[in-house]
Image (tube, rainbow, N blue to C red; front, side):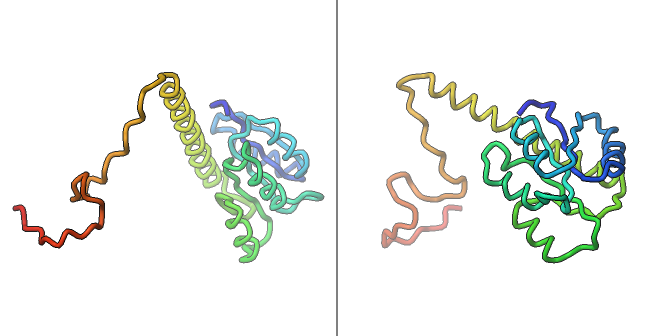
Length: 180
């Protein structure tokens, strides 16, 4: 995913989309919009989405259904999702949302400053995670390019007191003396 991935805002009410876009515009990220769950899924599958701000109650494919589908696909399963609901906190909705790995469940109307702060944090953390994954893949590819180079063994835990010849947890029958 490119570093300029969009924040996709999904709501079936045009005035809510406009308000959310206005609240998030100061972040300076590209913003996308969708008015249905099906449209959101199409945009997610096209790629370049770095965060999803999704209304729970959409006609047709609802917000939770979108998240369920996303979590089954490798290309979308790690995208952070913030769910929006116009209803008072429902414990069952919260449990279902968090079980699907939703980052947050926000009740509307939202405080624009608080929403911007949450979105900025989640988006930036996700982008850093993706950058680290790219770096790991590049390093592994460099290692794979060097034929015959053995992969070094993992280092022992710094607090381990066993010798390489002595397996962890083995009993020798000798008492270890204080080495101070």
